[in-house]
Image (tube, rainbow, N blue to C red):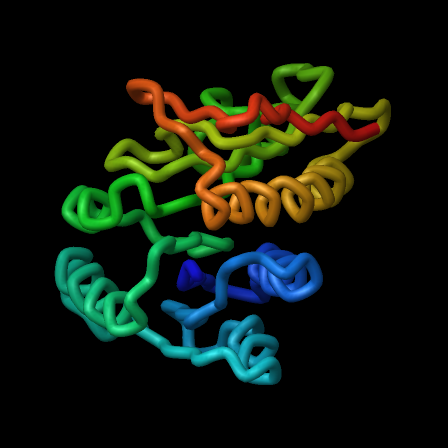
Amino acid sequence: MKRLVILISGRGSNMEAIVKACAAEGWPASIAAVISNRPDAGGLQFAADRGIATAVVDHKAYASRDDFDAELARVIDGFSPDLVVLAGFMRILTPAFTARYERRLLNIHPSLLPAFTGLHTHERALAMGCKVAGATVHFVTAELDHGAIVMQGVVPVKPGDDAKALAARVLTAEHRIYPQSVRWFVEDALVWSGDTVQHRDGAPQQLLLS
């Protein structure tokens, strides 16, 4: 039975999708805790209402990123996680932190990496005239929005799309591919080959949505 710790900064819609899928699909896993860097994060109440332990490590209380990450790691480790899941956690993590959880730290990014790392992904995709967009689940490394890709969800860019409309379509894909990726991890279905990761049985690692 794998233990999962999920990190959020806000509403935590991807966290909600993972919690619900874990329960509905009977994963060999439990959600050990939901942790936020913001005490007002809406997702904390969702977790508490379901009997999941919650904690807050307020980044504003720490003088440096290193100090914050050290305390965050201490709190995370108190829950003995097999996997740490970043679900809308809006902090850039230090190399020491990412190394501590190497190959057991997942993130989702709202673009088809390696395109459009960082912020404002949807605006940039539209400005470039992209015909498709999407989201990527990947293992976290010290380099921002890099690391082995677990799964990507691809959505069309439709005529008349603005950033809000495209973001909503991409979020639908996120809610599909993130729970699936986490499930693969807890089922030991992911196999490393050098710096890349594949499904052990060759399951498709791309989801196409209309």
